[in-house]
Length: 307
Image 1 (cartoon, rainbow, N blue to C red):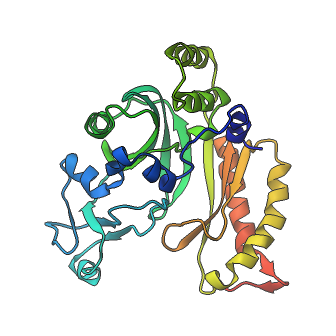
Image 2: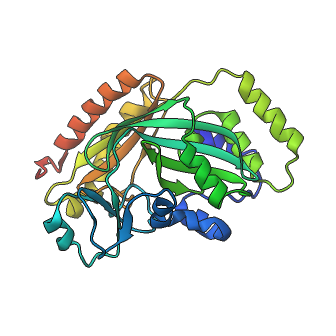
């Protein structure tokens, strides 16, 4: 059983958002944060819905609201020809941002941040990452801007993604904080219980402050989609589960792992099969390359798959 569900056993009938669909329904008074066009505009970014023409390229095209995650429907548009190819899109476009990509996990209580951590995302192909590395960093000013504008009395977990100092995504649920430490997860859960006293919150915060918490690393395992991918994906999933899961279960340097079903949303052109958790980033990256090679070469019924 993974860390989050171990902690969850201490709670009876607690309601928490498992994903953005849950969060959107659970927090209707705060759901505006899921409108990416609005979040971009409040920060002064150049952006508009299609078919309004941009002043310059490249731009990023995204759904105005995406409750599925994983950058679904996002693409980089580099020129006028590509723009007009998508002219009937219901997406919005935003100026192309440069800079480091971070995911910020916050625990808010009545609009105040009581705990935070961040993950640096090492970019790979568009919409994909080589790894996420947990770090301690100062929060960008624009995160406070979003909180002050939309979440000034919100209580719960919030995840935001930034490029440079600009917020590009806001989620009213845990990001990766539920993978970090039992006491932090416990804090996030007692925080959303209506009858929790401030004394208990402060006691838990002090316990976390005095504790040495090791930073985690997250390694996604990708496969580039091939011509028959959707047709044989379910069968390949079964083969991957049979061949790869035992390797992970017997690896003491892997803290935990998650295997994605075929229904899990993915960035365009790639399938994420696994997410590995480890304290050793270098080891995780080497193992990730090994697993990606194995997965690419796996066969069904001893027949080589088409790549």
